[in-house]
Every structure is written in structure tokens, then in C-alpha cells.
Length: 79
Image (cartoon, rainbow, N blue to C red; front, side, top):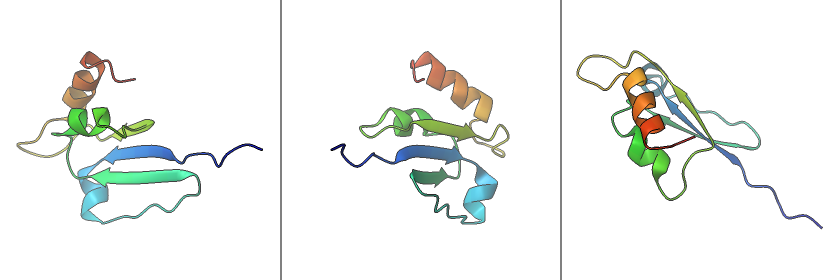
């Protein structure tokens, strides 16, 4: 008998989604929303990590852009 499958962990880095306080209740997914990408490397490389990352490219003034965050994730060998 197979064990219960783990939920796919998803990170969404998007200031608009976070501002709207959107909540995603999708079976088989554990979704976390973050208002900016400044901490993307630390959050994605953490103990639990994420299986899938959605990144907004335009995060607003004085914040790391999505493109910069993705580049940093790739440099850190995050897949």
C-alpha cells in the first residue's frame, strides 16, 4: 500500500497577489504567497524548499526585480 503523497509546495512571489491577500486552496498543493522577491533565495533554499516557483518580474520600487531573483536562484543552483 502506497503512502499518502506529499503536497506539491508552490511559492508565488507577487506584490499584487499578496496585497489582495489571495488564498489558494487547491487539492494537492501547498501554496505560499510572498509580497517581494528580496528573500527568494533564502526561502526557496530553506529546509522545506519549494517544488515550483512563480515570479512576478515587476516587484515595485526599491525591491529586487523578479528577473534578478530568478538569476540569483539559478546561480544558487536552485532548479
